[in-house]
Image (cartoon, rainbow, N blue to C red; front, side, top):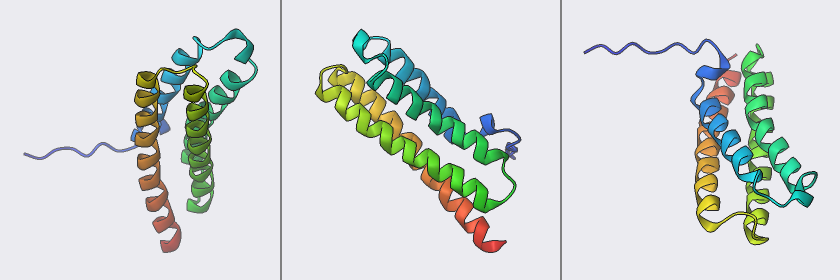
Length: 129
């Protein structure tokens, strides 16, 4: 049976963006429960970091050169690491339950691993051109 390979035409077709978007929704849902005094602290930082992940993936997708794409995808990777640090802080100060932390941390690892694959593929394309 022949399976049609889906052509990626827009950034929302990228699995890494889709997984990142799930992470965005998780962070927004969980940070609603954080203490009010964290609205302009940890909540703001976590939301900015997670939005930066999918935003940089989207922006990188729109770039023509592999070098430019790589730059934005690499920035998204840095934002994942930043978010993972903030997740640890939120757990350790008692804002996230162990269960919520585990679920979100696992999703962040999924995004990280998928993005690593995209970075590798983009780097290989850069060497070919």
